[in-house]
Length: 115
Length: 114
Image 1 (cartoon, rainbow over the protein chains, first blue to last red):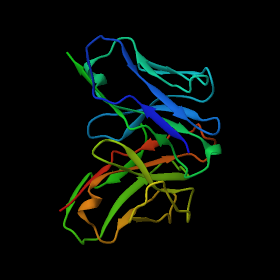
Image 2 (tube, chains in turn green, brown; image 1 turned 135 degrees about the horizontal axis):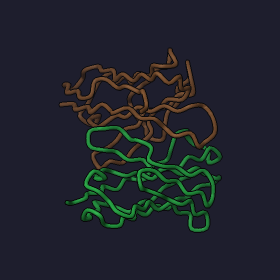
Image 3 (cartoon, each protein chain N blue to C red; image 1 turned 90 degrees about the horizontal axis):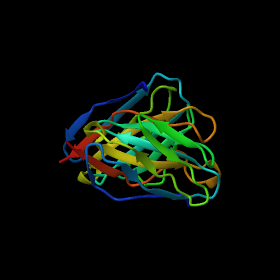
Image 4 (cartoon, chains in turn red, brown; image 1 turned 60 degrees about the vertical axis):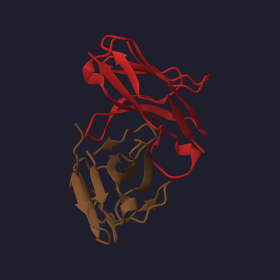
């Protein structure tokens, strides 16, 4: 079945550092890929998405490129801020993969930015 | 900002009680979902619906039940709560179209069963 693997946290960085959160996936079809962010006490919010190979999703300084050859969708940001502290989820949607509907999520990566 | 609402935000109840977690959305979305989020943050799909009178079980077996009598409303019910049901429950919705439609999430209900 489909699966998403992302780096385990917590990831602790200093403000203005460069961020990479790795995400790889397995899917039977041609999935769409997403990054969601969850701030403390809240639900998940869509951060960015990409629907086909070589697409780059970007939002709020974050970006990720859909790499079909490496089945990856790594999240990057050039200069993180304290307000970026949250849990980040990589996810895929693969209608052709069968099984239950909805997104398949990674286990989440807790990001902590220190001033 | 997505218009999807969950009540209550926090609920502490005793074992054996019947509870209903409410979820409503004002976006007219056909698809709705319930996810259970464990303390390690991992999300598990427990129920989903394609529209009115449609309910399906998700990847994770759950003792809860759901109903979809109206498009905007997707409540989740536990007939007899147990401590093992302690978790955060997240409701989500999306439009009924191709697989690149994002999910819109509510803020969740944190349930504690004592």
